[in-house]
Image (cartoon, rainbow, N blue to C red; front, side):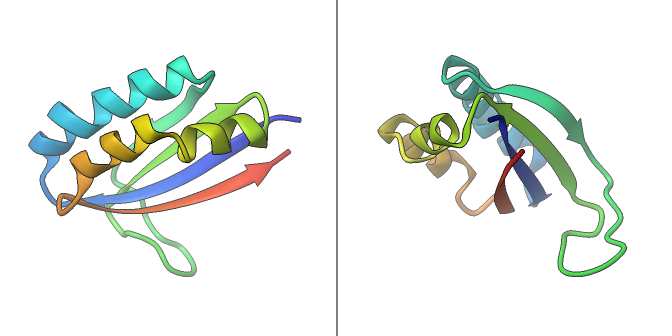
Length: 96
């Protein structure tokens, strides 16, 4: 059963984010079987908590186990460090 990461972001240093974290995570996620369905900016929070003016990403995975293998991988732990201090991120895993 497919699964998705629903990711919302508030990027504080766009240049650093786009030069470091973004390409590194995209390459690693694709190696783990993910595909991007949405990459957008300038979101408007209509209800609940969120990042007004922030971005949103939807990544599709073959299944939740594959998504979690990526999430818990040592490779992602290293890539994740590239966004420390430059972005606030919320990630939700949803199964379909």
